[in-house]
Amino acid sequence: MSIKTDKAAQNHQKGYNCAQAVACAFAEEMGIDESIIFKMMEGHGLGMGCMEGTCGAITGAVAVIGAIKSCGDIEKPVSKAATYKLTGELVKRFQEKNLATKCKDLKGIETGKVLRSCPGCIEDATAILEEILAE
Image (cartoon, rainbow, N blue to C red):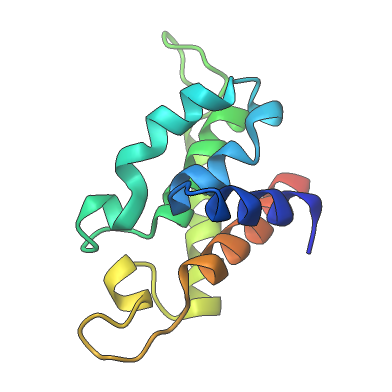
């Protein structure tokens, strides 16, 4: 387990939701105070609050990609296409590893078969994010 995956796991154990756990592990790299990230990601937990949406660990990782890779130029957002490509790659790798990206599917709500636990999703999203940021 890397330092980041360990930090994300510790965050979750402290009560952070999946999105907060992943995104807050990268606060330093994003140059954003952890308390701000924590607030911004609060509604992303539990599949955006209803288990019907995308896994919070994924949305937390996507937020990190945007914060790190965006040029931040509101007038000329030239980094958008590259950011979308990285985001798509993250989601694709997560899907390949876990066979789903929706919270309810990962947790087996309708099938009774858990594909991946929340701690597992946090670990996977963080590890994939680290790989993508290093490429």
